[in-house]
Image (cartoon, rainbow, N blue to C red; front, side, top):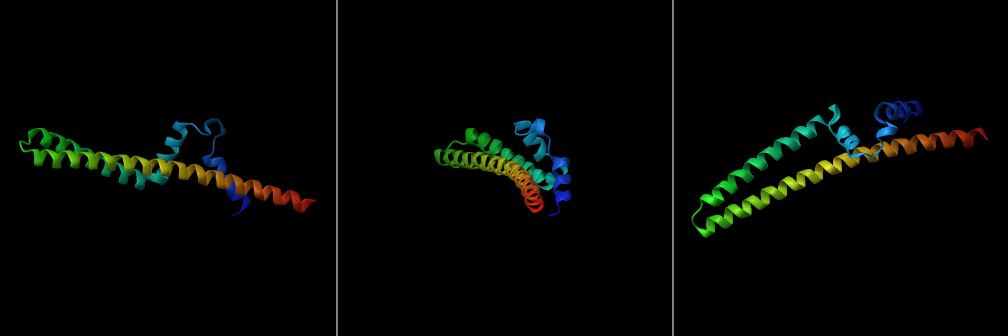
Length: 119
C-alpha cells in the first residue's frame, strides 16, 4: 500500500480525540460502509424480537405444560439468538479498530524504513 494512501485513510477515518470511546466505536460501526451489515443485523433482530414476544404471549395462553415448555424454549432460543447478533456486531466494531491499528502500524513501518534508508 502506498504511504500517501495510508496517510489519507488515517486522516479521513481517525480522530485522536475520540480514540477508544464507546461512542466513537459505535459511530465507526454506523457509517455508510457498514450499511449492509447494519440492515442485516437489525432485520434479524426485529424478527427474533417479534418471535420472542409471540412465544411469550403464547406461553401464557397455553394450558398444557408441554406447550408451555415448547414456547419457553422457543423464547429462550430467540433471546440467545439476539445476544449472538449483538456479539457479532461487537466483533465487527472491533474489526474496524484493528484495521485502523494495522494501517497505523503500516505507516509507522514505512516511516521507519525511510529513516533507515536515509542513514
